[in-house]
Length: 300
Image (tube, rainbow, N blue to C red; front, side, top):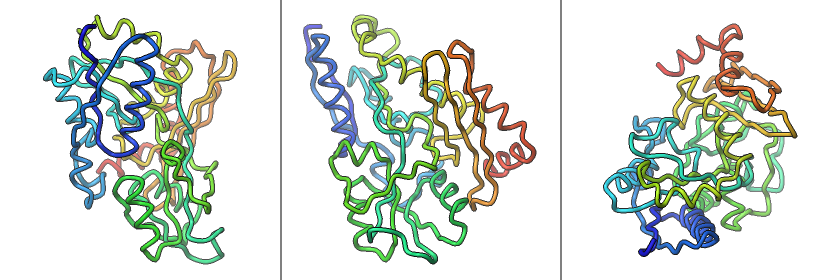
């Protein structure tokens, strides 16, 4: 390509880190690029919880429109923010190697003392799983970019706030009092970056295929299939994590009531060549007594 590839990105520090990471990967296959920043609906409305906004793809829609309108050539997204069905005319260009999938809690002190705690997060998934484990705690909403959320934690009378470990690591912002929540199932595709292009742009998409990290792509595909089968949006209280060991995929997923009182888990090992692993895992979960009723209630 004679002209630099136009990479579309949101303008938050984390989004720019991801876009620059992709920019470096493009350079490995001989492609020069420039960054084009686009404001998203999720960036412009920082007061309303995401699950109340009633819009799928609140962090991705504007970038996808810019891509379809040929204002950019590629869009870089946090994959967990991307709806499970892409707009017509857009396709995955490649998925780089995944970062950490786990959540962490940043605490005001070096540990959470006994008693009731106030924990900040606007993720229904994190809220539901936290209350399932700590039913006497309360959860308050927290919006904004990573830096803004850390600042709010310092100012407010909260005991801690939950973050994605990958985001803190990428910005080198892991505070001292941080604890990894290895028991909390992450959002489907958490820690992964998704690069999207126009389906008919074969001249660009062709050279990018070599940048796809096959193991990451396989795992996040299963996780997103699990989410799609449950018909849950990006903010639904659904967790999923797939890992590969030799010729096997270990898959664990969950659906949790918003108050934490009901918690359904599926944990299975599949042959790596099994079709529709995420779909099969979701069907197993929905086969548990009460899971279907809970999912219907959450949607309502």
